[in-house]
Image (cartoon, rainbow, N blue to C red):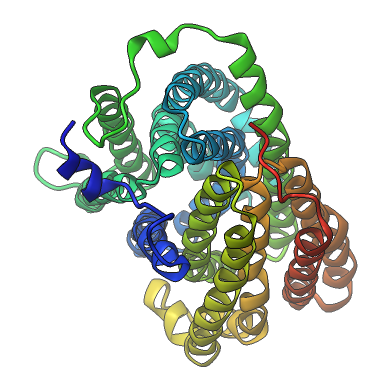
Length: 455
């Protein structure tokens, strides 16, 4: 592999300023995450033209889908943590072996979870929709089952991106996500509404568009990593089973996976509360969450860059720059999100109308943005602290933060406040949990023992 290719793909954090390294690592991840969010935005836009029932199908299923995706997020983060620390320690051989074992875990996990997902889809989704939104259930079940077909390929893509991100190449995921998003955008209207040889599949069409794109990116991204196109090559010999590496990935990844899984189950429970207020509230809540996700993708990008930098600095035993990275990332993130959330506060109704032009949904959407917007800088900044712990390999501590935020704060508050203030109680609970979550995460980083490598 030529030196030119290496320079074009890998960010050398040891020869750049921290702010420059944060920028170079985070902007491709931000773009990649924004394109990922475009999947949901595009689906929402076209399905919104069919009506609030069809639109609500994706809103209802997303928390359940995320339960399954969350299993691989923890192991992806473990892969980033280990590969980045081995990279910082200049141990390329162990980086490659770790990557190979991560692929084995991703393949087994992806197939197993997709099978389980199809088996449980009917009772789980019917339980979420309940009587007040039961008309949504048939669309949601069909959408969910088709998405499960592409789940193993989504896992392959996530692991491929994690490997290269740990090594210092964050542009790879962005390039792959670009192609995936283009495929999804092109297929969505063709398969939802029908055109020429394409049948009008409605909600199922949106699911097939996403699944087709995921199959493409999963296969191509894995092929490119094994071919070594980005300067980091996984060999077939690295797929030989190494129990001690697998145990290390599982020990680091399992708490993270459980964290995201418990979080996902939490959002399923929250969706049960939201669904009890009917399709109009479900639709407004779904639009609000999509816009929030779009904004917080910036934070997730900065957080992902923090994971790589913390891992490499700790691997090189450079504690001073690790601490400096956290401070600069926090200030940068809080400032950017504060500006963007100000815009959503004033223009929430217009954002809601873009998706569904129904007065009841628009009014609820306006209320959502008025209440939730100002807490976003706090919630999004939590990701900087959580990803600091992930980069250090302290995924057990990050799990405590995520589980506490949802199960210890938000869900109990929703149960109490929704009963008192209706759907407004859900928004109140979101505000309180967002602010408290950041404070808890900061306490873990400020007083924690994360400043030492785990390799």
